[in-house]
Length: 301
Image (cartoon, rainbow, N blue to C red; front, side, top):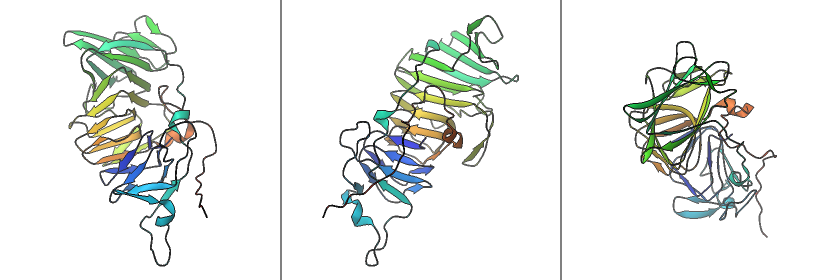
């Protein structure tokens, strides 16, 4: 899985740092210094279809540049350092999402927390006085209530379909200073979402802007038409799937972004979760097509 995967035209600049690989199916524009530890690739497709490949070009600032003109020569030193691949087949149109079934709710707020027993706590509220709590137990079942009442869903996948009670649903940690995700969760919102506070995994240790996870299965995905991150949110552990990712204060995203960072107005650091390379992902995260990936450059005589 890529740390950043975008279906449309995407501009990257110094506000976005990426630890991992990034791929853009549409036109790629680079402005200033882009900090990327892995490979950066683009398909440059005008119309994104499965396996599409466009012209071997990128935009440097406001100038469309053929990839051959930025290759280093003795008379023309490199303008770029690192791996830039042009000609890789389009990714997003060929992705598949497993069939989702799980809990379906209407909510204005969803709070996530972890009990002392290690079980997943979920509180969904339509208003301040109308809330329902759920418990995801360590045996994989979902119960309604904060104790082990009758099983609501046996063998729960972690999928939660959310219809916002208002203009958006607010997703928060129960305790902003404690882990909030203890198992695999996929929040699929039929509208807009706002992340208000740090959402973190139980088995992931972080220092400054670097995180390291073990081989546990705690993971979170958030899918919405728009995801806004409040200024109180410093760190989020998740795969975010959205066409509008609005960031107004420095944020570390431990996971990945599937979609363009169109609303990033502050420093965004995307640190790829190494577990994704082994196939670990919440059920709501689209899967890449299984194929060999290699870039090509064609030079016309």
